[in-house]
Length: 97
Image 1 (cartoon, helix red, strand yellow):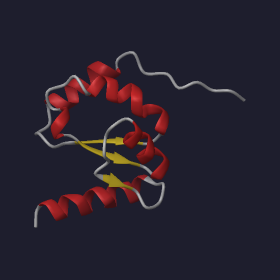
Image 2: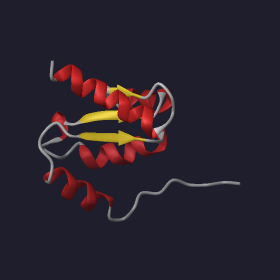
Image 3: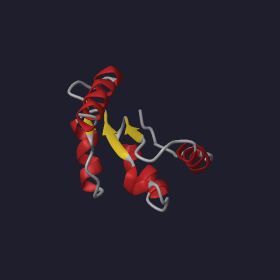
């Protein structure tokens, strides 16, 4: 079986709308290394990009972010959404202490 990752046609509009509705310092999380470059290409031109925190579902996705020139603020210890949420909560708690 062969598959191809494609970017939703409306992804840029969805990302821009969501980021405009958030305060600075929001989170963008990545669940697959194949999404890193296409999404970063959409995010980098945005004025809010430097304030975003990036999260990764695991070490492979974190490596893809690092190779793309970004340091993930949170990396899940287990590849699950719950583990990633816990890492994000830990980062946020550390920022607030």
